[in-house]
Amino acid sequence: MPDEIDQLREQIEAESIESAEEAEAFRIKYLGRNQGAIPDLFDQIGDLPPEERPEFGRRLNALKERAQERLDAAKARLKREEQAGGPDIDLTLPGRRGFRGSTHPLTQTLDEILRILHGLGFSTYEGPEIETDWHNFSALNFPPDHPARDMQDTFFLKDAPEEEDPRVLRTHTSPGQIRIMENHDPPIRVAVPGRVYRNEAISYKSFCLFHQVELLYVDEGVTMAQLKQVLYSLARALFGEDVTLRFRPSYFPFTEPSAEVDVWWADPDSGRGQAEDADDGGQWMEILGCGMVHPNVFDAVDVNPERYTGYAVGMGVERMAMLRHGIDDIRIFYENDVRFLDQF
Image (cartoon, rainbow, N blue to C red; front, side):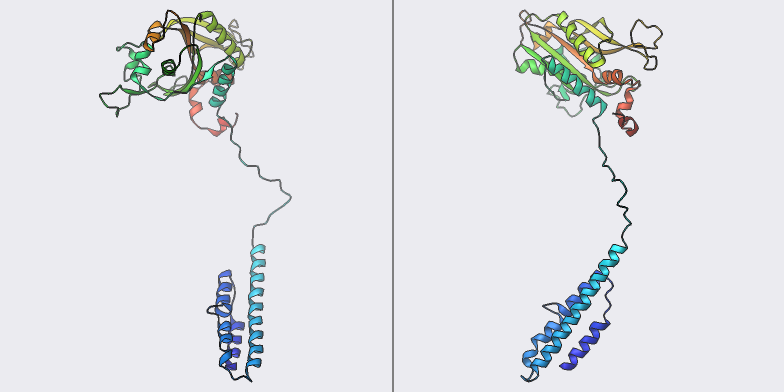
């Protein structure tokens, strides 16, 4: 058995330890508690004659210490080599800042509009983007043969059961006023923001989806003068005190009388911004439609039109953002171009 210690010592000295995996294999082979060669020899001490046991134990302890020394030295060497072979780090270099995103310009404009409207007393309601034909058209006084019901202007859903009211992607946020008046009695003063969808040709001034904010105010004695004052207050808060607005008579099935409101959009490079500046390279840009709620709409939701009046407004968020930031193409909002978005 003493010869086994000498043989094991020669094997330990001859072992090559060049990796962490080889170090672990060395430990298991020679020092492992369950199957290591040295612990196995310790288990055999009891088989020796009593007079040989002390010397054998001394030599075996020395062998165990030598095996542990080899293992510890190999691990230390491997750790130094790993650190020396790592990437060079210059601790004097400035740190790398993490990428910080920002809010999309449309979201910024929408948030600003809602902030102003909240200051004017409007609460917020968000309706569904998939609407029934009744909420999107019929309750808003759109006759059955109205062009807006045509497939060329509206996205209809194919999977709606025939016996149910047809489903559409809402073409405006006006269905929100129907849902509110169905569930709440006047007085009502609410803003309805959200995405809307129309099957339009994509160009610099139109897109197949865009954002609107609907306003609805219903109470006793509401007038067109109050509507105009709210719109002037909103425009001045968004575009500045010198903003120029134009009200034009118009037609919408759900309001009477109706109007469209334009803002004078001057050439940003001209340095001039009033509508009377004929040479400023500007133009009128429509930003919203409005009017007094039609009595037929009140009838559809069981609100007494003899007692209550109200106004409704539908404004385009994209147009507002274009005016605020001097953007001349609506499509750029949806291109996800980081060079554009980084400016906000």
